[in-house]
Length: 323
Image (cartoon, rainbow, N blue to C red; front, side, top):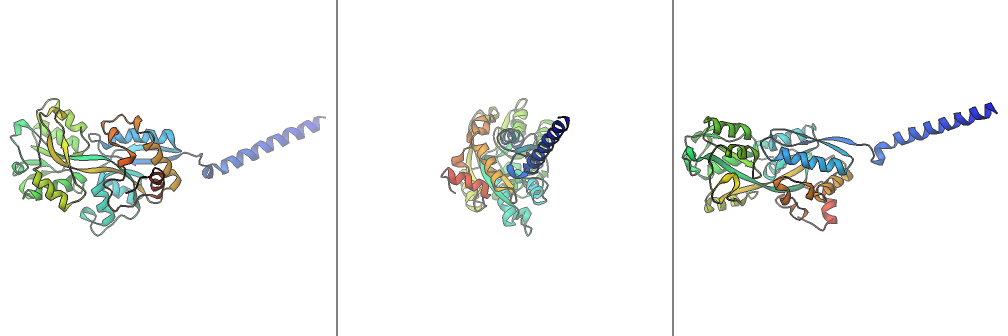
């Protein structure tokens, strides 16, 4: 009797071990194993970082991916990090991602061919920020002033150079400073610089912080200049910063590009589909001010010729949304 019981217990133990081994061996194919992925955002004073935290949480809660948002130098640096295979997902301006694929501007002669789009998100407004005490009232008034134009090769830097050129100015006509958004507003606060180009969703955290102690001025771009810019660079669109933003007293006309999510081309189609679905089926959980502008209906606007990742394309096809 004892021998029978021992054989029975031995058989049960072996069966359990076999089932456990099989289930472990199938974890990767069943989709149960969580994947740790990096989401590149931007500096803490911009929009990418706080919004990236919320989008990361939504993806983590609704898929088998565990998303870790990371601070970065934003668009251009993010594209280079994806090129190097050191992250999987990233925020970018649509114009910078297009330049990366098309080997233009800072990527001239060196295209990035391992990235595709998930979607565009919301307008990123080009904000020429200064204070009332600076006396600066127009783009032309920047001549001879200390102006932050963003890091070399950044999206803000490209926007600054294009807008300055449109007004007959170059980097040599200003005392250009290469600063992050936080450094820019800190510099204005301290009196070390006079103005800054900041390309980000409004309201931008760094500018909001500056407005607490300062009378903020956002320089307008004239209608004819906006038309010229849009014609020459089709990734731009007219935009308005509404009165009340940063306590400004009237609307300010300017331009914007779009923010977007970019993913490595070698990402699994099913996973990217689930990530895209998670974001757009849960936009009501995005509490950031830009959340209300993130919709499936506008997700393919401003992408130009950039390819969608097949996983994202599958989601938008199911929704009947096309470029």
